[in-house]
Image 1 (tube, rainbow, N blue to C red):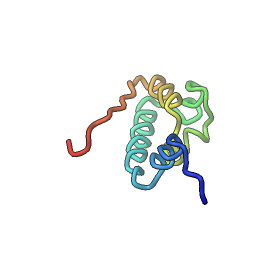
Image 2 (image 1 turned 135 degrees about the vertical axis):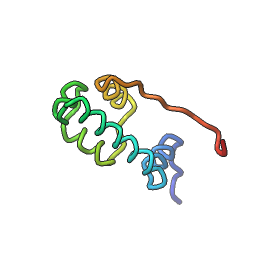
Image 3 (image 1 turned 90 degrees about the vertical axis):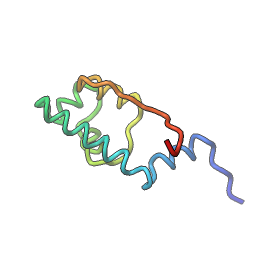
Image 4 (image 1 turned 30 degrees about the vertical axis):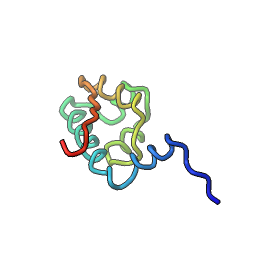
Length: 91
């Protein structure tokens, strides 16, 4: 019998699932748009955030969702605040 996944693993699988692709695609678009508006290359943004250029490229393509601490550093480098909200369904 297959062992059930721990709660955090179930959440991670759900967050990275296709039904949430719109969220990461929207986030990717905002990051890329803001980076270009500031005249930064992917490498420059990576240097400012302590990550790699391939990680920025993956984010901008809507690839593997970044960790929240990485998103916070990216938001800071782009002069933005990162906002995460929990809104009850149906509202």
